[in-house]
Image (cartoon, rainbow, N blue to C red; front, top):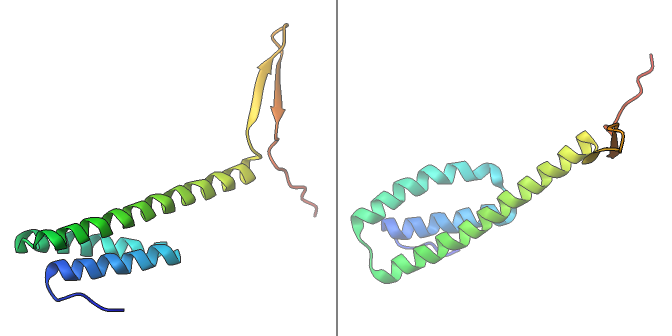
Length: 116
């Protein structure tokens, strides 16, 4: 992979490319390390005032990574919801009849039989 120049903007572009690879490979554990590094490099980029072309490249790379981060978050939330359904037995519906007696319909909590 070709690395960009040693300017703060070039290093930030490289970091965003590394973050993208981590996102695409599903390496979510690596993501927190990118936060601090990006904050540091963004401050350095602001101080260096790069040209408009480089700023557009950075903006495009950051927007692309943000879309991947959003998708990863949706995936984690969906997985968590599936795990909750598996643990809790899914959604239930509580209703009342004409006499006020309640009834529950739907999945019941999973139960395990324990034998000694």
